[in-house]
Image 1 (tube, rainbow, N blue to C red):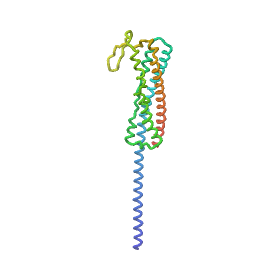
Image 2 (cartoon, rainbow, N blue to C red):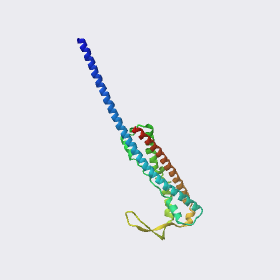
Image 3 (cartoon, rainbow, N blue to C red):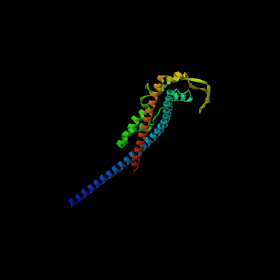
Image 4 (cartoon, rainbow, N blue to C red):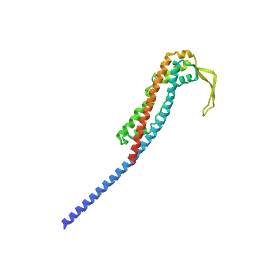
Length: 246
């Protein structure tokens, strides 16, 4: 009888242990499920913020591309007009002034900076994490620096500005008024190209105009390629968001 009671107690104890173990495993499983759910929610939030920043950056790049293309066209016409020795005109002035314009693109990177603080490994998709990191740390930084030409002597503004001071003069026969959103309007005089024969024959000016035109073309190419890369990454993010919602 004693042996029978001992066997029953052993079975009871084993049953209790098994129940406790099963309870612990279930609790761990629930805890893991909750943690995975939190991580998925965080990952989805990061992707949503990254997508928002990229779409804003894409919009800004698109606007800049349109400006560059307009100036590219007018600069090409200016070079042709100089070669053809066209008469002095407003379009000559506009082409010369515009050829020195440059535009700064400031990529939206707050979401990526937040990701770096949290840890880039929060993004569980390895291939997508790599392309996101490369886009923000390489492509967009390179674009912000205008292909590294900001401080270079081949910078478009530096190439053309000396000729603006050399050839542009105030035309006192053409007064103009300019208004501002938060200030009074002002009365000034327009500018025109002076010493026109010297202007037409200035070989250094022609060289710099062509170099500036070439640099602007390279910028347009780089900006459009960046838009294409942003589109690929955004598509990847959208697919990943669908997966995380399952």
